Length: 393
Image 1 (cartoon, helix red, strand yellow):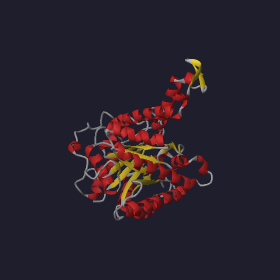
Image 2 (cartoon, helix red, strand yellow):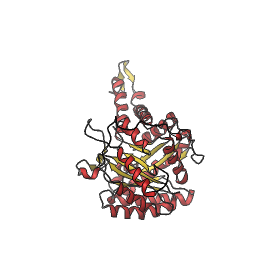
Image 3 (tube, one colour):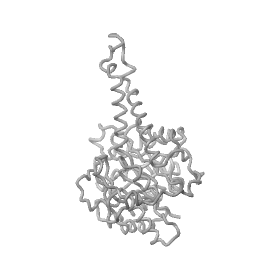
């Protein structure tokens, strides 16, 4: 049975969201007795194992955090958090993150090639280490707009090469963000790419509607508010078209009012009710017994309330993107380390213990970077609590 997964970016829509008091109380999930599928092993999961993991998340009623990594330290923090808190993890790379992993020196001359190489290097690190952390990991790449398709093509070539040698793709999934196109052009291009990706067991995440705010070179802070939400009819268009691709596995990031970044209270009005309404609409279209036929992904999750997150999970959300909050936690770990050890970080020799005392063990970059990792692991633990993704393995 084909699995369609829809990633919705949160918003205030034409639908009226019930107040918090009016929302139905959470019910106990019969899925609570579900067990991790045997296909899901420690390490990177792809193809059928990926589908089984996402189905398990939906059945158990939890969502998996998806974290943008730009360094080996960021990757290690993701894997450590997954191992420490007992849940799966999604490690993802943006185009800019791939460029940073490759080295900014290369970007000037080879922007797309460097980004592909950086993402591949990051993916290989995850593949090499994840099995030792004994957790299942999804490898993903984030937003790719139309102007960046050469990067996307390079990633697919890397997957096809890896598939030919290993029988599975290097990554688990990739995202296309053609939300600025007409819906017809967006869907047509996604169908074309999904036909190629399905041959090597890759999942496609596409965006429908626009996530506001700014992230990693994509600035939608001044976008027309009418584009920040998606109608169920539009989601159905995507579902219907992509479902026709043999072996097609896909997600759809459809706007329901959320934005990238963290803003002052009241500036962002999330409406998870849209997810519930869309489930009902598509369920009726399909005419089956499944009342939650769609799998949702929550874009722009940093700064969202636990109430909104968990109400989205009740509608079948199985993935939430986190970037801004982990950027802050990484920096905050370094800031706290510098504050604690400031008197030992002013020179190579000389500190409160003596003018001739060396400071090497304090300014060793591994010290402040480890502090950054620890702070990020802690922040991801809080996110996993919000997502009900603790001790689910």
